[in-house]
Structure formats: structure tokens, C-alpha cells
Picture 1 (cartoon, rainbow, N blue to C red):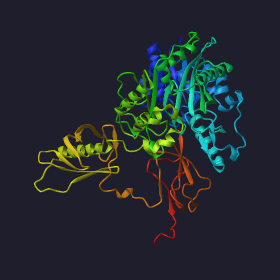
Picture 2: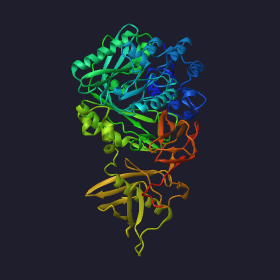
Picture 3: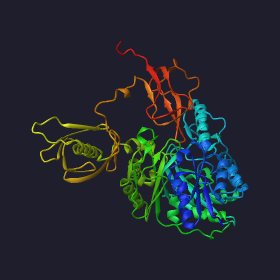
Picture 4: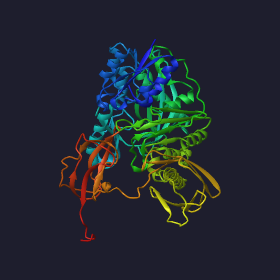
Length: 628
């Protein structure tokens, strides 16, 4: 019997495995990088072992260090989680060679399926080699790993060499394997997958389907089970294909077979030889604990002949620290407050708690929020309501996007469900939410109340100019009143019911709105109700002024490479890639803001930069219309 499990991973998945281990009476061991020394998964484990360093390549991807950690802590089993080493056959062998129980599939099955190129060969699907214009668009894809890393859609043949290089670099950083391949890109299909579980006695479970079509950058954002609206014959074919693929390689444990469904046909994508991020929706529908079943199978126990019957519908939304309106740029900073309501069938899998810091080294996912209900419509409604009431004070997140997505008519209509959802709807989904300007009023009045408490002052006999506060592009004007309250002049139609430093009540069109307000320092982001507001300083800091053409870091990260031969004095074209930043295991291309001459270059490979750091300067050339 397994008594102590080390999880060779971090964050949310480590915490999730620990939860099951506690319920089973199994002790837990965490591993952590220096950047994760105070992380939630370290705090929740019974013991923890340091992996010196911060980058994944020197910590979580070092299988030799993880095995040593397991032996040092007295663990007798290793669970790989997902990502990092979870689909690494050599790591699986190292674990078993050390006399430890490997909670995963046999190394031979990992080798057969974890490499997407070999998996396709096994199923008789050949990758593209000599790509021509007729093959476009194509998808460049990492042979190892998943999560959208190392993936690029290529629509122009001339762009293929650079995209191959970028995908390979990103894959090597995330998975320690830079192998990539090219396959046809199916536009706007549905991403459907089958959850598998297979024991050592030959019993195979196909635990239904999941739809994971709502994606950005080929990373899933909203997932659900079962996949809605599939014809019965097609669904049966997917389940049968998944089981046959697992049996063909002698698969054992939990795994997922992924397909792209378009025009009524299913195209095999890959088999992930691990637990998926979205596994909770299957657990909720089937009433099982897949981690507990993984442990049982790893110890040689037999599954019942048939899985439980499914019931209801479950939807999962991934909360990311990112800004969807700015190219999904990852965000960092302290999570001053992180609270998700958990009434009813709401499940939260997370690796963060209030007070934790979101750093630059790892994936920006904060949590998975899952709701199970009798119907799809009810689950979507409850999940949107839960997310709307979630309080996340700190970095920008995709919370508003998730709420708007779940309430969008296209999401409600299964016929419109496909991977092109965000390409079609992102602008509308990232528009300022209703009530944002009233939240700005609340923030302004809370600030005024705090200043009144701090410095005194208030109404004067001689009427002075309106006070102003600006949040983003929203200007608020108000003045103190004789009775100690406030009168709002811009926007019109707002009556102040009450105002205090931490709570403001406003009446708009006869409806009273209550805003809880929190600020964590002068000039910092203000949170009013569910809204995150950026105050604009009254007097810009001269140090923040940059010369025209300055290229600033859009996010904190590490400069991984420059464009070939790039040097000061080069002529560059608008949109030309100049350098690449790595942030949270993803590569982000930084391009020239305009055509002109590169007059300064402050970026160098390996340099870590903060958001807003000056990377380069492109001096634009005067046109005939420009004044001399």
C-alpha cells in the first residue's frame, strides 16, 4: 500500500492531488523552486523539498532532482500531475528504477502516445513535411507536452521558418523537448475529448466526452461535460476510437484522447498520457475521484466492470491572471484578496490564496471554478453568477471575459460552439462591463471619504470647483455638500446614498447599487464591487515620459532572443518582430510600433525586465505630409 506520495508538480494540480491523498490517509510531499518557496502547495503538503533555482529547466523539469527529493522525504510513490515531466517516459522509468510507485501509464505507452508525431504514426496519420501554399493554413505543434505551448497557426508560407523556430524554443522551455511538427489546420472545429481510465486487468472505462472549444492561443478557457449536441453515432465512434487507441499501446491509468470535430467528422489530434486540467468536469458528472482511481490502479487494484452512470452537466472556467484586451498578456502581482463563493455545487481547484503573489515563471492560471447542475443552461447560469461575485483584488484577470462568454448567445447555441469563438467575439466580450462607470463613481467617493477622514475638510460657504478623479477613460466630477455628503455632477443621474472609505451606495434610475471598495496604496488599482479600476494620476510623473517610438515591455518576463542580426541603425518596418519575451512559459513577440530606424536597443537575451521597461527605440521617418 502506498503511504506517502510526492507530487512532481506545483500549484493547483499539486493541491488537488494532496486533497485526495488527505482523504485517503496518504501523506504528501511537495517539491518547490525558490520562486515557489511560500506557495500554497508547499504550505498544504506534509513535507516539502527545495529544488534550487527558479526557471522550470533547472527545477520542475529536473527529473533526477525530483527522484532524489522523493527518496529523501521517504515517499514511496510519485504522481506527476500534468505538464512538466508528466509525459516523460525517461522520468517514469527513473521513478520505478528508484523503487518507487509510478502513478501513471507505463513508459512504453508514454513513448507511443506522448509524442504526437509517434501517436499519429501509430494511427496511420503522417505529418506534413514539404509544406506548399496549397497546404495552408497549417498548425505548427510541439511533439511533447500540451496546454497550447509550442503551437502556431501559419497562414503565409514565408512565415513558416520563423514560426517553427519560435514554437521549438517555446516547447523546449516548457517541456524540455524542442521537437515540433506540422499538420493541417482545421478552421473553427469543435475540440472534443474522451476521458479514459484503464487498469492492469484489461478493464477500460471511457468516461464520456468533454467539449473544450472555447480557447485562446490554443489553450482551453471554458470546458464542459458531456460535450453537448453530438450525434449519438459520432459520440459512440469517439469513445470506441479512444478505447482502441489505449488498448493498442497497453495503456494503464488515466488518459485523454483528443479530437477536432468538423463537418460531422472527427479528426484525431493526440492522446495525452496524463490527467487533464479539465478533469474535474468529468468527475462531477460521473461522481468519481480520478486521482483516487489513479492511485488504486497504480497499486494493481481492479476497476469495476462498468463505470458509474453520468448525471447532469458540469462546466469549468479557468481564471487566469491575464488581460484579454491586451493580447492576453499575462499579469503579475500580489493577490490581496482572492475569494470565490462556494454555495451549492461550486468547486474551486486553486494553487493560490489571499496574500499570495503571482510571479513571472509559471502558467498564469489562478484557479478552476466548476459548477455541476441538472442541465447545461443551469450550470452556465450558476457559474457566471459565481464568477460575477468572485473577488480578485490585485492583477488583472479574465474574470469579466468568462462571465460574458457564459452569457453569450453563441455559447448558449451549441451550433455556434467552435474554436473560433474568441476570434469572432473578443472585442465585444472585452468591452467595459455595464456598471463600470458607476464603480468609478464609487471609487472616487471612497477616496474622497478616506481623505476627509485623514485630513479633515468638507463643504465650504464659497463654492469651489468640482473635484475630479479619472479611472481609465472615465472622468468623475463631484463636490461635497453641506450635510457631509457628496453631489455627483458627472456622470449625471447619480444620487449618493452614503459614502465611506470602504463602501459606497449609489442610486441610479431609482435603483440602489452597493459597492464595496478596496485600495491597497496611493495610485494603485482600486476595486469597486467586481470592477477593477486604474486611477489616472492628476500630474504625470516626468520620469514616465518616454521619447516617441519607445518600445516598452508589455509584461514582466525574460528576453529570450532578438531578431537575427538586429542592431542599432537598422531600418525596420511596422509590425516587424524585433525580439521575444518569455513570460509564464509562453513566448510573446514584440514588434516595431512603426516603420523607421532602430536608434536604441536595451534588450539582450537572458535579461529579465519588468512591465514598462524600455526595450528599444524606433525613430519614425517623416513623411511628405509631416511638417518640417
